[in-house]
Image 1: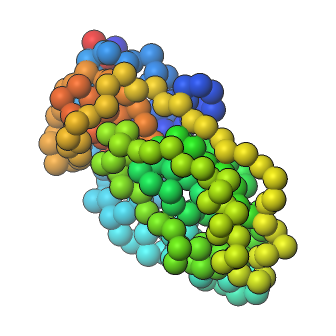
Image 2: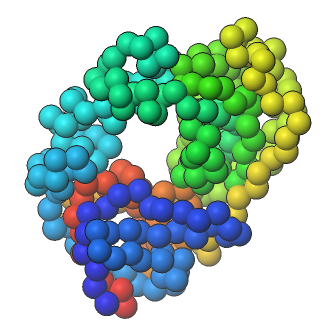
Amino acid sequence: MTYQGVLTKMTTEFSQPIQYYLVFENDFIHMNQLLNKTLRFQFVKHQCLNCKLDKPIYRQGFCKSCFFDIPQAADWIMKPELSTAHLDKEDRDLDYEKKVQLQPHIVYLANSSNVKVGVTRKSQVPTRWIDQGAHEAIEIVEVPNRYLAGITEVALKAHVADKTNWRKMLKNDVEEENLVAWRNTLKQYIPQEAQQYFIENNSETTIEFPVLQYPEKPKSLNFEKVGVYEGVLKGIKGQYLIFEDNTVCNIRGNEGSVVSIDIE
């Protein structure tokens, strides 16, 4: 069976284990059903996720001109503390920025390769944790806008990591942590403006991923560079496909690539 489409972030369903779906314009693949099957990928072309043109992908699935123009790729996406919609101040598109920034946001702790702090919209819990390959996570504060979440993250990352080591995450080289204890320890560092939003009583969320075999030495796959790749799917964690030969494919890192997929 052959599928073809532009790669975008896999859709997930929270269950034990997580269910993954690769969604194309007119079809989808339930990836969990492909474990232990041989998949053959062939790069076809680029397709910018915004303008849909066959132009080289710059970042986040967008061509260079779109990346520096559209609000979905503005600096405040990666740096929430730069959000200005709460001040009624436009960056690229105030209507879009108000829609995204002026809604409840969560500052959380997640344990994937190590304990790290992060920010996401409340509507993206637990999707954000799944995408990061976290096997446990907990909310610290729930604030009414992205700016407050951003300044809280900046304050906390002076005391806890804010990055994931993707190789450790994929090798499952992680230790169990008491995230409730971490949350309580970090409370003192929350900025005054966000102190009232601290979440006192909650517990960790645990996440199980569909992985039959973890890679010993993960090798990253870029479809554009290799052209064609064939391998036996052994697991899915975060947004990574894990293959029997230690090759791993970050679907997010390949967004905007049109590929054909043959399933044996």
